[in-house]
Amino acid sequence: MTNESLTYNTTRAKMVIPEYGRNIQTMIEHLLTIEDRTQRTGAAYFVVSVMAQMNPQVKEADDYLQKLWDHLHIIADFKLDVDGPYDMPANEIRNKKPNHPGYGQEKPKFGHYGHYLIKMIDFAKTLEDGDEKHAISLAIANQLKKDYLNWNRETVNDPIIIAELERVSGGALTLPENTKLVSPTEVLGKTPAHQAANKKKKPNKKKDNFKVRSNTNKR
Image 1 (cartoon, rainbow, N blue to C red):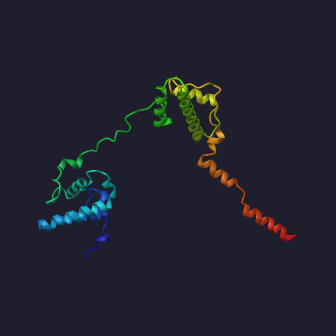
Image 2 (tube, rainbow, N blue to C red):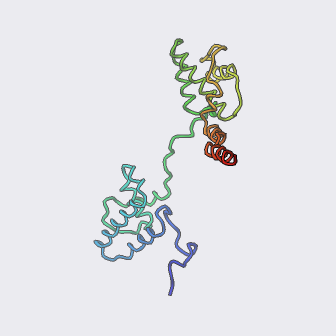
Image 3 (tube, helix red, strand yellow):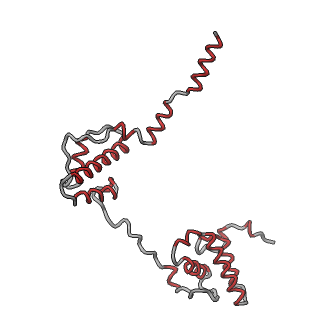
């Protein structure tokens, strides 16, 4: 007498698509043993519905149902003969690599500032000199200072940030040297670490009141 629950995974068949789990693979393997085609087809539809319930995120894709049937045939090693809604996929689909998502192609020169900040700088460079370009340049400079303070936790002079803005923009964005940027206190006061430190420094009013009452009672 053998107990399946006591067997080790190392002694079992290799998982074809581990995301669906051992039970789904066992159910699909059982489909291959059903001799009646109609009954086998009905059981296949049921297994696909269970696969969809176990992976609800696949429903976000337009062709999610076809993918589930493709996975069914892949797990069955393309030996499952049923009347499904889609043709059995080609065996080559098993080794087919997914399309590249598209990121990681660019190598930005100032990647440490982030992709969106560089895009803001590129947009500001296209503007004509005037109030709008000045306002956007000032906003970008403030963001540069916030990023610097958030990562370095040190005081930085405004002329350094203004010079950095000019360097990153290739000289297209400039601000007067006497421009006042956001203060370090305002930036650091909004960070979670600084807020947590302030909470620790707040006096415990309940304890203070208790001490006052205790001293009064002793008198």
